[in-house]
Image 1: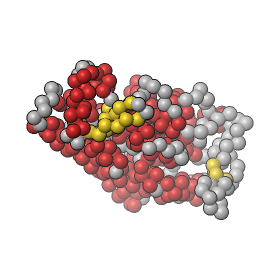
Image 2: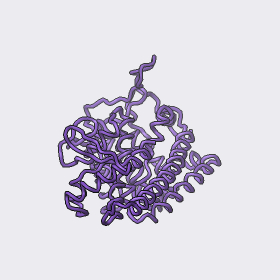
Image 3: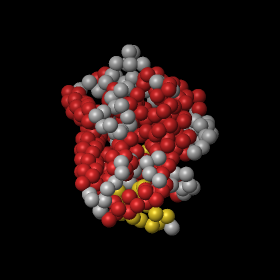
Image 4: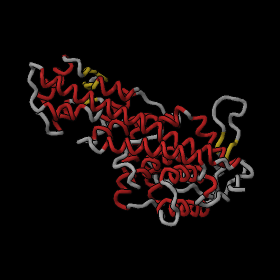
Length: 373
């Protein structure tokens, strides 16, 4: 047998095979062909993103959508309006699902900055991301927890145990040590980075080291691995949309590894996710930049003269909702000028003014449309 499977889904899988997996499991013609497609799509995305002068245009907007969608996989739902408003009001208290989503975004950035300093993965990285997501000081699952993964939904198998992760803090830490070594040692484990990311994502989810938040932590890890290995300069590729759209396949492929040793379907699934998401993000970036340039040209030609229109339009594309005080705090305009310009842009149908609970927000209609697609 190329890969020892989980013999009993109701018993903790303390014998998860250590990494790496056998070459025969990933060096197949079908997997290598799909790997080539995924690498080409990712390289095109990287090439497009590096020529954008202000990558904050992409980082803020796309990471907000990732936070929303990844949270939706865990049945944490918020509307675009609620999320964008919460992001605009970060200095005030946010509650409910929007707060959970913004925590995910903060975890994404804290983990990214952590790796910028350490250059390598370690157990503390995973712990920091998890704790940021859950806003907790909790750590590795304690020995007394008998954690199980159960079938969701309302079908005849709902509630049935489909997987039991390893139990025991020492065992979990040993498994994480093996995972970290696999991630960092590219000399000893010479596997293409995209395949390595997919293998490591499965391993982390199988270890399931925390009480909760493992899925979101694992999805954040995906993008951090790509930036850590230099495949992307900044975190702009997120797989959660693909996973949400193909959620049943995602869990089916994970179970396929644990129950049948079927690595092929899992690796093909992840490579398709990378290819598909790279293409979607590439076109989304092009559309955002095209619309931004078009609006800037429109504003420049308007009889109502705008002072420093470049900075104004640039700022309006860093997030869908803008408030007067944000332009003031950024040092772009004084308060009266900022309000006057934003209202003028509403008259020009570039923005739409919204009043929510007594506060005024200005919605970038085109950016909102693009992100919502």
